[in-house]
Length: 136
Image (cartoon, rainbow, N blue to C red):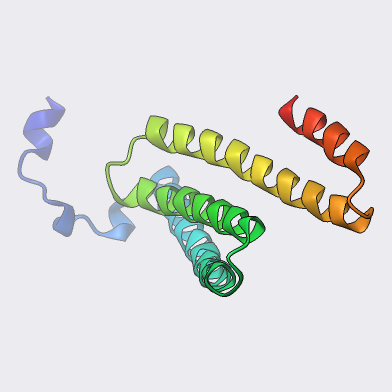
């Protein structure tokens, strides 16, 4: 029944005023989410360029970890922006987010552990205990 009614309707013919309130709320929510995530993507691109510059100039493994974590952030935000605009599945977005958040957390913990190791005059006990905590 509905298929016959909707057979001749094109998306270009549906005006915003014709939509019901819940559909309007959904579109506003999606649009505001895309705008917010686009701002986040701009910040992440700036961070990515700064991290790439650090890697290029210093070539320390710590800077590679920062670059890797920033690339993970870029990947998650890109998937979040593409989700309402393309046919990226929610399952793909879920797995990308879970894996990236966990790997990013590991990178940040490792970076902070290394900085603490340096601050405590390269105390071996700190790196051993910190590594055990990070692996757990």
